[in-house]
Image (cartoon, rainbow, N blue to C red; front, side, top):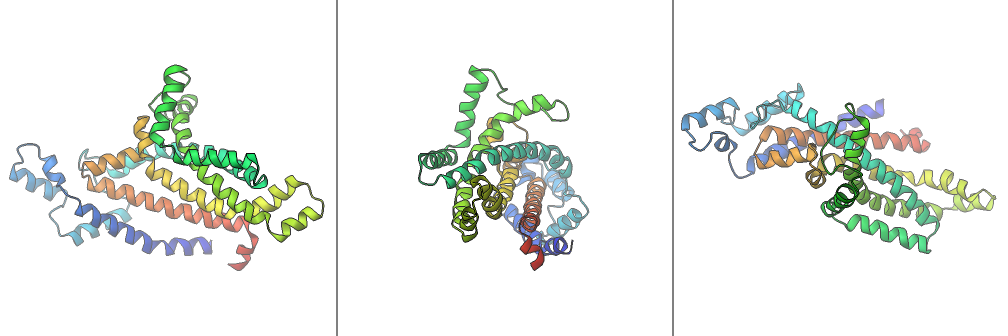
Length: 314
């Protein structure tokens, strides 16, 4: 608990810098959201009323301090476009992207980690080259192209899976899995390629270690040496990469959500930027930053569960 608290306290300066950075850049964007809200006539009285209503006529330092003070109480403001609380908008969109990201991450782990282990064990063989080519293909193929291709094959021709839409797991788990399977596979293939390459490199480094050669010399089964001794010590970079990739999924699944018409987090970010919806953009980026901090904290905790030496060192 002392370690976790120290990490959370150390994250406070990061959150302050992120909030200041996002707030400043948002104000530097061209355009004025009040002009879009006022309609075509743009009555000066209406413009003045809207600026006063959303406190856009206050000095920038005052606006920033008001926003931070409200955020500390859980109030991220109101959307300038829909006049809904930002916390409600985030609460309605974040579970959608979280479910998609979690399924995509599971697909990536199931595909990428075993392939990386096999490629490392069979280094220099046809299996190694085949997995490397597959990983490079998964990284290189654009998500939007792969998504459209999968829709044509599995939705239009075979009619096995729905082409678009979203169903909550609480409403219909089976239909929710069917609607998320294609977009999750699109996201998961690229991540699987990245995980495969890092897993292979980490395993190759561990397999060259002295204790692995000693375990082999003792006559242990190759499967025991690889999975129990080598893989556990190669988990550190894999855990780091997994947490970072999951954080990127939460804030960056924009194209895939657009192709499959999924009302998720990424689509809301893009719409808010185009609409100059200050409060939504600031709230979303702040939530993504908090997510990255929590994922990094999770990675640090997993390090200590994997490697006992880190527990004794702290």
